Length: 269
Image 1 (tube, helix red, strand yellow):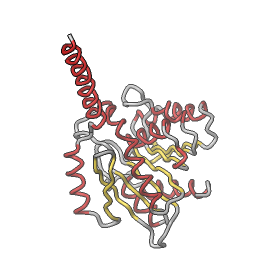
Image 2 (cartoon, rainbow, N blue to C red):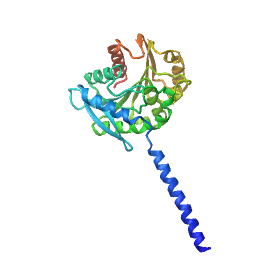
Image 3 (cartoon, rainbow, N blue to C red):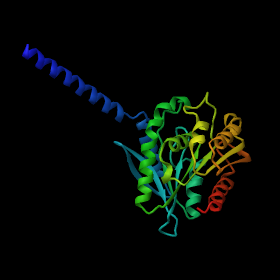
Image 4 (spheres, rainbow, N blue to C red):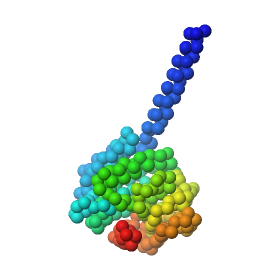
């Protein structure tokens, strides 16, 4: 009987040990298409003219970022630039104009690779990847603070805007002083998270920019986004529509960046 008890003890603790290993493995699992991230990283590294490649760690996963510093040297103001669905930190539409022109205007820009899926994936399929978002923001914030940044804002586009708002809605946003969302979709039927609900929880200043020729889901939910900020009691939410702009602000890049810089300057950034 004594031997049977010993066996039961070992069996019990062995099961617990195996379950623990399984839990840790599940926690460490990465849903992002890391092969695609690697391909993007190679392409960006080979073609990058403005800025420097930086590698960061999110848990055990290494991911790409691009830092660009203004000519003025040490700068305390920094912006984390967040791309949209399936692309990379130097994407020609929205992302590169923002990161380059804001650096030319005196900001340190830090464009980061967000979790991605294959090209054919829909936004709804990105839901599991949102769990990987906080670690990437944390790594970016830590890098910027260690390199002298004291005022950090986020400028984000499309699905990246949803990721940014979702992150700030649940995180201690003390490290981020303002959020700019560009082309944000708040249509619950087509998005992996309820972005309007996230906006309602974010209490830092928000600039919500969209185009008059934007995606229908972005245009039709503009009132829902504004209402969410009002309901959440955020007095520093502002929404601006650029009539001629499409979802990627093709041909309106300068106006987009000027609008962001003007808003930040008025806020004292």
